Image (cartoon, rainbow, N blue to C red; front, top):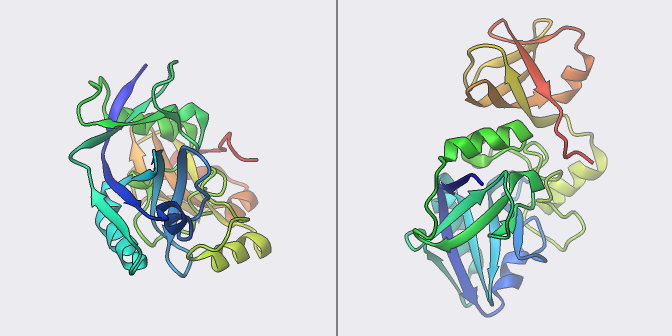
Length: 260
């Protein structure tokens, strides 16, 4: 079973009503031992996405390292006078990804079962044989976006990053920050942009345009080896009659196997 230690910032949240406090802010309900969710801006864009682990009566939140500082600031701003403690415990805990194997270590990734399991443990508990780059290739081939590589803060709506298809948004839950915007988009508009994995037949890099018939249909956000993740204009892709190219090489846009 491949194992890697992920580069994550880890927060310990505790206090009276901590679950209700966090549940009132984020895009998903805390009904499971491991929840995928995000904190949005009031305009509905992703400030940070993360996983929430239930540990007894407390919560442990892990997010991409680049989001750690802004997420901590936002959570502390929203807690106001609530008796909630938010402590960075990144030096004491690790988050591991385990995939392509069997066993009951950790919890199944709620985004997609083929991603394997996430395991929160004390620092140094496991001895990983693989790198985060190996895991990155695994999830790219599954077509699952990952904010560590694929987008930055306040750049994407949840649907752009497929969070609504990856069990990261509950449109029926109570209010959360940015809910009005994303719920309206969900009810009244067709999603025009989505993240899609792209199989490349040659060299390309983040920022390169995907074109069909000379018209841009998307942009590569991240590339590793011969596969990348792109933000694709689905309406333009659907109307294109020509092959998709990037830097004049063929690019195959892969349809994810997790769409309902």
